[in-house]
Image (cartoon, rainbow, N blue to C red; front, top):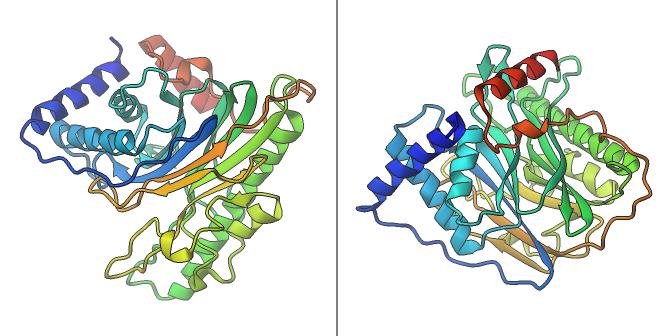
Length: 353
């Protein structure tokens, strides 16, 4: 058993012991079954599995992983799942193990850094029951004083012969320190960081669609995750983040749903209700089903589901290409058991990238 599998097993084992005497929360709502549907879910899991920036003991974190698994199983295990604010690949493996579906596994988890010596604790992972023909993660590029945090994860999935590109994003938050002398300027800077990030993701997706993958067309693209902005909210009236996507032909999966029914981040004493967790698609038909699972003790954000009709199979006519400049992850990095020598090799690859 390798290091990743050992840690995942310990987390689940500790949680099982704790859960014998725990009261389980049961989510309401289950995504409707759709024949020949592609079920995609997103969830900002809030510093998962610790629940905050400080790690917790194995029992506490293990119970959080089990609770998240229960939420996803009872709502319906998705075909594709984008997890935001998940800590690392070990956590991905542990979470996948709770879903009791051997076909469902992580295909990519980012490895973003706070700085050259500190690994970020909020990563973005993409899970899928379909095979990934390409996958990777790319940090956002700095431009002058605009230096967005984190980056995006992406994967091209072979959905029954149709190549579908999925992007997971977590754009700059709206956090402004209480002691800030110019909070209005910081709010503008946050907006500019989100807009710059959206442009970079779009550029990657456009290049991927233009070049194809190994001579095969990418027929559809889904860009989803925590955008930390909402065009329906007057606070973001001047922001172009989401309009960049719609102007590029992407459709908001919840555009036809009344705003009052679209809250994905319930408000608190500081912030109002928000629709920050969003899914945009291009190349897919209108959604056949949608579900926002009520807020759970796992996270302050709600899990969000969309089911699209599966697209037709890809045509083999595009020029071969790697997909728009994002670093393709080697096969060893797809969480199928990394021996120490492979881990060392991957660290060398990261340093050289």
